Length: 272
Image (cartoon, rainbow, N blue to C red):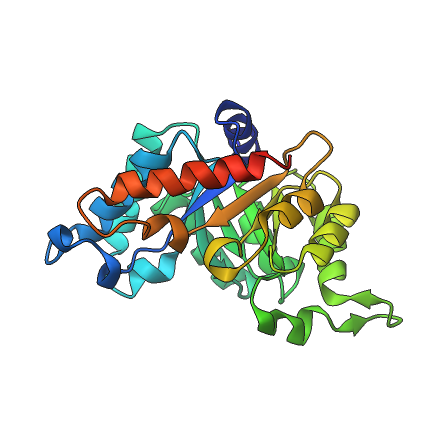
């Protein structure tokens, strides 16, 4: 089953546009996980179990694992999610971007080593740097477009060509109309910029959008959903990480995470 098929199934089955980000920071873990050699895996697996019926995707951020030499726990986590929560796609948030020969190795890492269903990719180096990812036709390739951080405007809002098109608009159009020949592409567009989110939706039609920036980053749920939803009320993977992961600090942290995930999913659904 392809990434887009998995995503469409999860949207429908779980009645959810919520993507649960897995950014494990051991400094914020409950005390009972301290000094456990597999604490990162155990923490994330508990979050996944508590929220799997509320999510349309999980998104582990690779830096949180690699910084702590926990790549083996990332491999184990993705395998665990596939086995225990089938039908929920896993997006590896890696934001890779390099020349073709190097991109081939990164694609092997993401899709063959970690067995992610999709990966985030930086399009700055152009189509030939993206083609190795597109060669895995059952996988999702989610390209950065209008990111949620304030500094994204430094480049993404600059005018190109005849001076009427912003760089993020050019990326959106190229991905949707030229690069997405196999129907596996999606875009990253931040919830912190609802006007630009609406503009991207106008450009790309029903292309899926991964939307970070609600919760801790301050994006507004109502504005996000109204700007980015498709005509059938889907099309979005609205990511929340810290607000869900660290909702509780005790041994019942997963229950607390579920409460926030449920409230977030339901808040999203109110505006679909």
